[in-house]
Amino acid sequence: MAFHRSIRSRRGRRKINTVMELQLTSMMDVLVIILVFLLKSYATSNNNFSTVPGLQMPISNSLENPTDSLYVIITPEGVTFENERILDFVQTAAGAGSADATYSFKKTDVDEGGRRIVPLYDALVKAREKAELLRAKSTARDAQGQPLPFEGILAIQADKRVQYDTVRRIMYTAGAAGYKVFRFLAKKQDS
Image: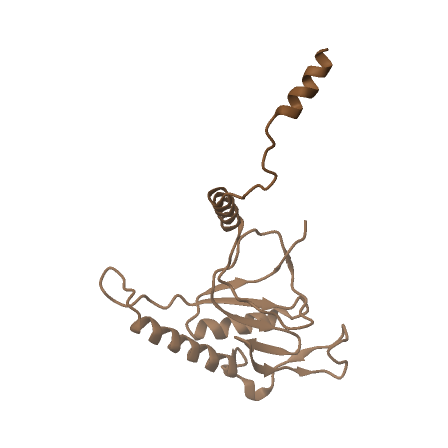
């Protein structure tokens, strides 16, 4: 008898509307939560460093992201500054792909006893003057009301195959042009 009552009571119940409307307030809450989560978890960087094909960069364990700055790319074939090829090296007969190949500067590309690279120096000075002009026109000022000073930060991407003497000459040239802080870029080691 109890069995019959439950069937009868089920039949007598009101039918619930099968059409269910989605409430706009709840949907907006869900979307806002998703948006906040995505914004909090999204890491962004102002850096726009590019590389050239075939560049073999050293590996690093550092977790720091480099600050935005001007950059020089040194490959066994030549030097690139801000995506513009500045100079090409003179290569031996062994060729660029060979492990025995050596690279050197043209006689017209160096001065001061072979320590300063003239085309790179000219490009760095031009970039420094442009940065100083932009800082002078900017509304950002220091405590004395003067334009912010030129920071002189230069990021260097050097191929592993490039000789130390070449990197040293590039650093000397950058120092002569007013760049005092060097940041060497490396590839992040995969975990």
